[in-house]
Image 1 (cartoon, one colour):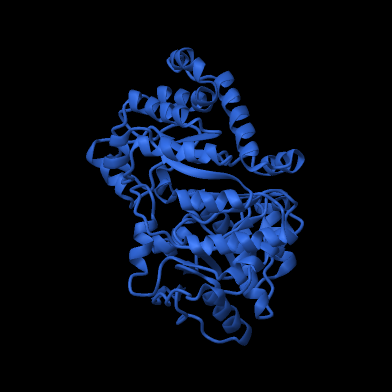
Image 2 (tube, helix red, strand yellow):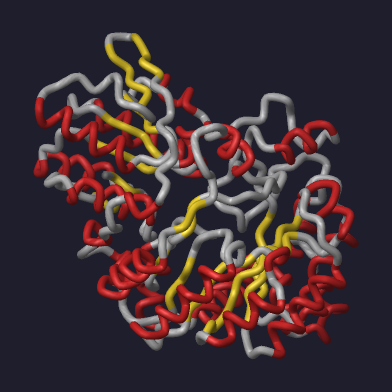
Length: 463
C-alpha cells in the first residue's frame, strides 16, 4: 500500500488486519516521494500495489501510479471513496483494478488468488482490466454483523509519523443522512438491497478495537471518528461503561446536532467525554435549509450549546463559508451563531464542491460553477480560496482568516470585520494558521511534541 498523507487511515488498518488474518503481508509505504516509493517497491517486490484514494488526492495518486508503471510491471489497484463512487477511474492507463465499497474480504480473495496463481477477474467488489477488457463485478452484501470483519491492525504504520497521532477508533459504518455536499446519499443508494447500511460492532468487539488503538498510539484522548454516534443510545451507554473499565483517558467524538439529546449528553457526561465535534456548517437558517439540507434552527443550536456547557463538555464546531448563494452577512451569521453558542474550539473552511453532489447542481444552476466542473478543478486545500465564480474571493478568504479569532474574542467583531475588507496578506494567513493549530490541538488535548511532529509530517496538506 502507498499512502501520500501522513494520517491514520482506519480503512488501511482494516485492510492490514484482513491480510494478516490470512497469513499475508501488507507493507505500507507512507510517502509521496517517487524516488523513495520506487526504492521501496524494488526492495519489497510486492505481488500487487494498492492506493486508498480520496477524491482530493486523485491527481497526485494517478501521477505516482503512472511513474510506477514506467518502472515495474506490477498490478495496481485503487480502493477507497473515489473509485467506489467514480469507477471510471479504471480507465486511467496506470490503474489495473479498482475496489468499490468495503474492501476487507475482496482483498482476502484477491491475495489468495494471486498466491495460488488463479484468476481474480470474477471477485465481487472488484473491477478488473485485462487485455483491454474491463470486468465489472457486482458489490457483495454489506458485512453484517460487523464483528465478522477481521480485527483492525495498526501495525502497518509502525515506524512512521502516524505513530504521533491520537488513538483512532472507528466503530460505526454508514450514515442515514443526506447532506447536499456529501457523497453519503450516493453511497447508500449504491448499496440499496445489499443489507443494513448503518452498522456498528458489538460492545465486546468495540472494546477490542479500542484496545488495539491504545496499544499502538501514544496516550492521549481517544478519537471516535464515526459520524453517527447517538443513533443507538443504549449501545453507546454500554460501550462507554466498558470503556471506562479499560482506560481513564478522556475521549472525543463526532455528533450531529440532530442527535444531541438530554439522554445523549447524560451518557457522555458520565464517562469522561472531553469534547465533541458538531457540524454547524452555516449560521444562516436559509442556507442550511435550502442549500445544505440540514434542518434545525439557531435556537436549537444555542440550546444544545447550553446543554453541553452545563455538563462541562467542551465542543468543536465545523463551519463552511463561501457557499453558493451565501451573502457576506450570512457568512457573518455563521460567526455570530458560534459566538452565541460560546463555541470552545471554532473551526472553519472554505466550501469545496465535489462532483456529483446535490450542492454542485445548485451551484451550476446559480452560475457559480461551469457545466464541465470536474475533479481537476478541486483545490489542494480547503483553507486557501474559493473556486466558485461570481463571489468576492478576497472577502471569503479574509473572513476565514478571522473566523476563529472573532468567535473566541467577540468584542473584536467590529474591527475584525473591517479588516476583512483589506487585501489578504501573509500576516493575516499566519495569524489564521496559528489560531487554527492552537485550537485544533486544544480540542483534542494532544501532547505538544507529538502534535508538532504530526503537523510537520503533513505540512503540505493544509486542512
